[in-house]
Image 1 (cartoon, helix red, strand yellow):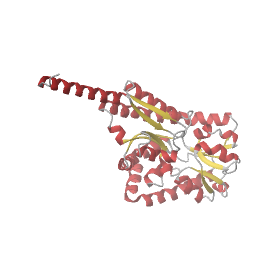
Image 2 (cartoon, helix red, strand yellow; image 1 turned 135 degrees about the horizontal axis):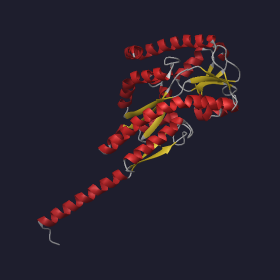
Image 3 (cartoon, one colour; image 1 turned 45 degrees about the horizontal axis):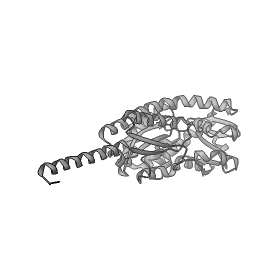
Image 4 (tube, one colour; image 1 turned 120 degrees about the vertical axis):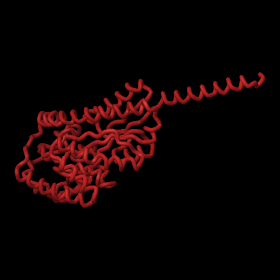
Length: 330
């Protein structure tokens, strides 16, 4: 075939069309991996599944997300780094579990700093710009956050005051629960949620503070007799994405991800509210005794809260003071 100008132009056009088709095919075949640490029955996981379904529906399947629950792909301590390194594109973590990286990550773990869902939402809103900036500096983008229902004590005997925790082997899951255990004279022991039943069964721990939802997930009735709700904290789970992966998507798909995240945040908060009563009812139905906190226990927790709030503000510096002032003003 003679290489005429017309032939060369046609070949160039065909090549460009082939390249465009390949790019479109690559976009259509985009597949993200999503690592989450909690059981399929947990309301956070159910919310995540709805989030994934919303993304896939809004993109007509052009963006596929494979979800790995219950720490099956990565345990929670490795999820944030896994997203940073591109091992997975999406992750969910308990943000306060990463408090050793930055004090702003552990704020919502301060006992009784936010004593209600309403206060927890205000605290998270005040902290959001600080947390987002820290995520962005490490190549991540926050998508949404959802609080856990408030924590309570799990024990085999009533807890009349904080003195009852002295000498116990107390399960911790972030820097704040570790500090709390130390302040009350307990022995802090780091245990991930999925490992709680075995830790109780083997005597590694004999007490903990966590949500009723986690108690249901771990079948607390098999290892404890008493649950004492104290609104200990409303810690937040954060769902986030690698910025490189997000920015590689076509604009319409990026918008679909962000819209699905907005819906997940709103839906997750309602699920958290509903989960508090549902989970407590389940604990009672399965045999745990629900003990309301005594005044002595409340007073002790308030003293600990004041101490830990001041400690956090000292660590967080000027920005920390600004955040607390904004939260109090709200």
